[in-house]
Length: 118
Image 1 (cartoon, rainbow, N blue to C red):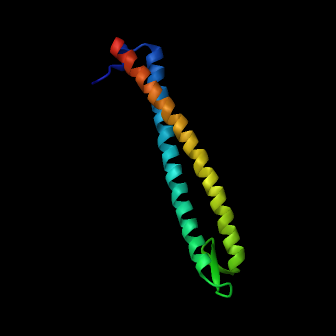
Image 2: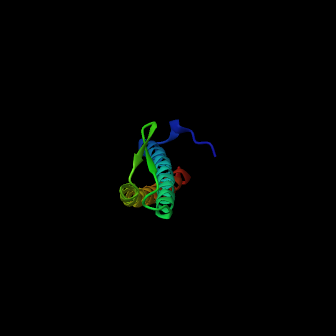
Image 3: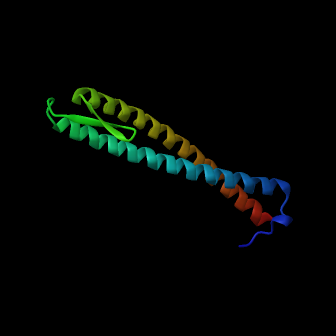
């Protein structure tokens, strides 16, 4: 179905613009969530590996482009703290994504009804 934008009233044009913006916001939130999910999985794997090694094993953490020797327990605590932070951020993004998706679907239905009536 092709829509001639010139024939649409201003309210419908505004709805299309808002729907486009919501769609872009939704895409951005999904990308952010995917990045956070990857970081969370990476952190969980690091925690698992750190828990396997003994306390006297040399461990290193990455700072910028270099590796720095660290204490296992200190690094493990840092990773656990990071996991909590990432988990909270993922939940927040999921809530935003859910609200945005709901708004997007609602606006999409409204717009479809408007277009069918024109």
